[in-house]
Amino acid sequence: MPTVSVKRDLLFQALGRTYTDEEFDELCFEFGLELDEITSEKEIISKEQGNVKAAGASDVVLYKIDVPANRYDLLCLEGLVRGLQVFKERIKAPVYKRVMPDGKIQKLIITEETAKIRPFAVAAVLRNIKFTKDRYDSFIELQEKLHQNICRKRALVAIGTHDLDTLSGPFTYTAKRPSDIKFKPLNKTKEYTACELMNIYKTDNHLKHYLHIIENKPLYPVIYDSNGVVLSMPPIINGDHSRITVNTRNIFIECTGTDFTKAKIVLDIIVTMFSEYCENQFTVEAAEVVFPNGKSSTFPELAYRKEMVRADLINKKVGIRETPENLAKLLTRMYLKSEVIGDGNQIEIEIPPTRADIIHACDIVEDAAIAYGYNNIQMTLPKTYTIANQFPLNKLTELLRYDMAAAGFTEVLTFALCSQEDIADKLGLDISATKAVHISNPKTAEFQVARTTLLPGLLKTIAANRKMPLPLKLFEISDIVIKDSNTDVGAKNYRHLCAVYYNKNPGFEIIHGLLDRIMQLLDVPPGEDKGGYVIKASEGGSLLQHVEYLQEHPESP
Image (cartoon, rainbow, N blue to C red; front, side, top):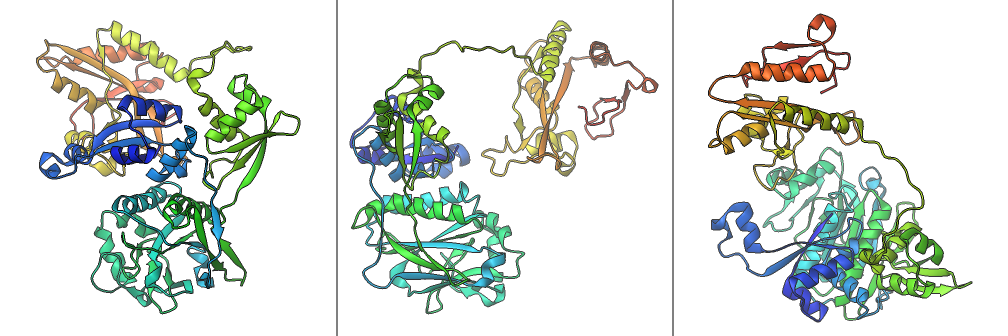
């Protein structure tokens, strides 16, 4: 779930009242959200980089709120406040309108060269907007949240926002050879060609993650105004010429990508969230997009649509008994304006452009359940029953746990994540040979990869308990994770058993006896000729013994 960080005082000011931490936590739960953490910028930096780096950082209290991944309208302070205010019935849901400009409409012309790179683009204008520092920061933060979420790290959609007063339309979205594109990018002092920029950004911690999207393409996408000024080179960087600031009054927004539907959703979300600060609230100036085939469309769509759901269906699915009128009221609180029509059992729901997550009747039922309150749903025994069976692997695991304990070993539970050193360097192995699954953005050095063996966890446990009386007889039976290109997620779990005997004497016979007992329980005979198990010297650098279990299925752990 995405996490939205908002300043507590700013949030309470927008909500028009203050809450205790407990009260706001309860409000979030009622609305289907979760208050994940109460922290500050200083505390975050202190945890990640130490107290020295945190010196001088802000002490302003931050609320970190987990929101559902498909609720793009809650990814910023503006949408969050609007949703909560409608939920508490303090305001009515605003109506978003697309208006035509008084003068000439802004045009974005797409050329056919973009077809094989990023063929789609949409655009809109926020006219006479008033920013403050906090509003501006929220505007930038929303773009980043959308990039990481629905935009799939800019692979599907990239957002560009520009100071319209520094540009001259119409705009052209085309594709050119990297050597033919030259402009001054955001936060740089001189012009670079696209080739030079790609080399520069390979060391940029933020932008290097997006370079692969276009770096191997013969042509790079680029947007120009009528004077040849570069607005952006999507999905990498905007031009410095049209950068927006707190003093920007008119914003031209363009979204380019490979998914037309998601580009339209992203544009709708941005303009609906921040049209609140326009001179004419909740109005968005239209822009015309001309496609390579000569056809044109006007954006943003800001489309409202209506769905019909029967009240008895909602009652049945949620497990409640509410009148259609009450159900319509509950849905209205969830930003879904509803009314009872027809035979008195039909509810007509208006889906606003901010609720792209509503695609089926079950989504409407879920919102009704949230508004009703999960804790208010009466628990009842189901009218039918089934007999569940334990997953065979878990059943075997539980049986082995009992027998391991009966053999005098104590079970430990360790983290599934560990450092690269734990599974490689400390065991005398090369990290590339471990087939480990790496975390792309580890928060600490202790949790960089998924474990490929249970041994480091047991050794850490022994290290932390050296003052305990000897011997220490420990075991763990749990999953490890190995890269596997044949699976849809690129990795696979294997259930492993690991035991350690720690004493002043080697005690190899203890582990040997335990191994024999386990194999006896699993009905695996000793001896290679019988297709059973044998003990061989390890070829790894850890100088530890390992058991090779010979059987017909080499994939078995």
